[in-house]
Image: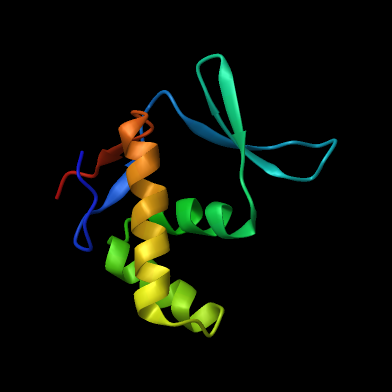
Length: 94
């Protein structure tokens, strides 16, 4: 999957978000591994779960954190592409 501004990514069936009760952090779980997410990573994946395009996610985050949309876009695309390269994201069907 190539992630672009018009992509509608979602977690692949083998990946899921889970709150670690001991640390209070959100973890992205996938077979035999886990990735502790920071606040922004968690927000990106939660926004993707709501059937938004990447550009929609960028707009929400840019407004929420009063950040430069170009910088937010670059970071969101990089993060999501890394997850897609690991097979943890798939394109939502239209």
